[in-house]
Image (cartoon, rainbow, N blue to C red):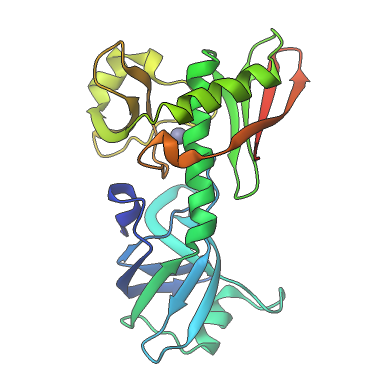
Length: 256
Ligand SMILES: [Zn+2]
């Protein structure tokens, strides 16, 4: 089990941690600031700094898997391999990293902040386009959200809508609801492709805007990392709208 520091504070750039396991799946720490691929959001990249000061580049972060291929509570840090033929395990062994070692885990903050800006923008899109989502991908360079709908969407109108919500500087609040509350309010789940982060009895939620119905912009279950205020998103625009199928409209986001 890895303690997920990024869920409580998305702005943490580094932490000290202890190596708990090393395998072909990657290196597992007792706690980490690295977000693992999930909910459409890419896994973090960054550095692992060893006790002697050596730095090992981390290329990606994934959830661990058990023998049945089901995700576990472990978060696996994957090294950047100089030679793709090298095994992950061999890479850690060559670096002399061992279970019990104390290390510093440091994310590539500039890359993560781009992911946070895009992820929050996809939630703004859910407000602007009140339709179910059936696909989502958030990368450092672009993001895309697929809506289950057949009506056309207007690129300029959506870009203007995002700019308006960014200029309004709406705060984001991380909260939680119980599984039972979520079951009683199925409309909170806007995604058909990403299931809410259940498992502990409590589901993490992201609210944009104030508490009252009039101030609320969006509220949905989400395990991702977000900016604290929509003003921090800056200049994000809709670069493309694609008709993916008769019943799917894809909105692609980019930085202006
Ligand atoms: Zn989300």
